[in-house]
Length: 297
Image (cartoon, rainbow, N blue to C red; front, side, top):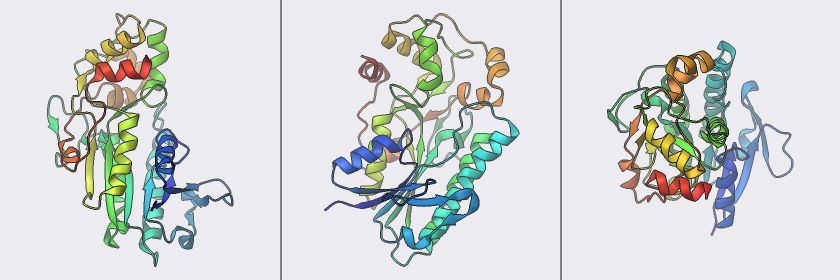
């Protein structure tokens, strides 16, 4: 018998294929949306603190994906919107679920490896601690905002996603056009570790977290074999049949993207996902070259 699952951000980059996977296997998915609702979806407005607690009763699991996009230049206003969308949205949802008479078994919360900050060659596990920088503080607040659900006995899982790789969207949004034009190359010195993961495996990880009651707390979701940025760009160029001889120097990246360049493009995060693997999860894409060849063949 299928599960009843509520998803915020169901129309987004991860939410769209995740909704398809869950419905294809027989689950019923209800969308939590900022739209008017009334079409089988449930309306909420995190900024205004609006969510009818009675409407979130009775679900088997809740998956929380919604949040302001981190893409673009990080102005003071943009950074405030990024943080508040996650703090307010997660807190509102967690408190509503905590107050429900018929609580869900689990709240599966999207998170990110940005929590660790830039750590060079250090192998990062779930207990590696919070790093420095805007993203590290953002993810700390994001994960802590789910505490009301945890206090109410709901199983809370924080899936810390690596650099999500797909045919389009995610990290490919800004990268693919340049590479297709033949002007792609390593970023900075290219020595920073990029812990990638395919969108297919991300979607499967969320379903795995829903299905396995033993999962609780944080789990890294990144392919078992991270690569350096130089290796990633070389493999991407090969998959797209384009040269990769035009590196982007650090000063140019910082001039163009400011703080975002430091924390997303030049940061080094060598992620270990063995904790998730130990729960029985198997990554479909473990090596970068065949993964990119499959995506762009």
